[in-house]
Length: 348
Image (cartoon, rainbow, N blue to C red; front, side, top):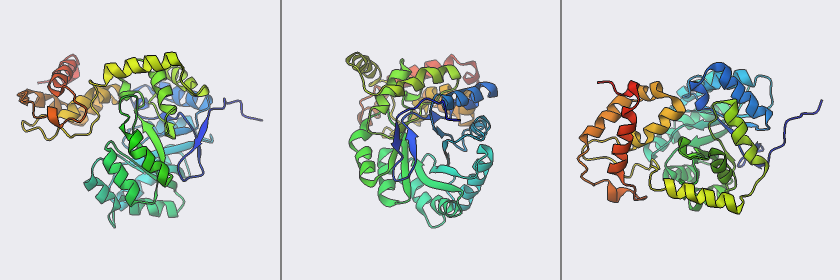
């Protein structure tokens, strides 16, 4: 019986033979909603024609929920691990296979490689690359990719490692610098670009339009995080009609102007703070809370991060270091005030 799933535009995923839909599913948010809601969101995404689903070992129950929701279905799955050692990441592949209920993972990625020291660990003789090469040779994974937030490190990775078929990186209306740097390099090397955070970690007021902007750029696939079937039904249909109208362009420019000077790009050029303020972690915290929940951020040291605000003397040393001219002391105060409204983060 022929499939009744809608057809969405597809693009080849780098040097692989995989054709992925231009919009995929980001698996972070489903870990903080009830399981039945998570499974409903994943299944609705699939029913609407999406064939690319991204998750990670670090996303608690996300792999298991995707595996349960799509058991027996034909789809492309990407997962990832932050393990930097060969044996450790090889074992993580086995765990992911079991969680996802798969015989093979289409794309397994090095997770969060955010500086050159971490990249060196991955590429070392007994580093994570060796583990994934072993898994690939045994047919447990098909392709290898990398994720991170620092474009320079990702560019170095693409230049140094021919095994990489994809790069996953933040890319959205505000965080768009890779258009003139990383994206051309990936095009030259036939490496797919997976755009994470297309709605800025939840900061954009019109998520569907922000996603539509993203999939109209020279990337392969955008993977917005969607926690409920309702969000899926709002976001996925934007892929059915490519191109942007003049009215949409005007709305996008308004969103860009509102957020351009308020959005931390996590480049960390402002750090280290001489007073000890954890600037980037603090300014990224609101997004973590929205996508992963308060308790998860607390596991990552939220209380210490928030407490570091008290060390700020507003000396201003961070200001000239920021390539985006953000009003960092003002943003620190603003975020600190937001966190004080959350009872779980107001502990002594």
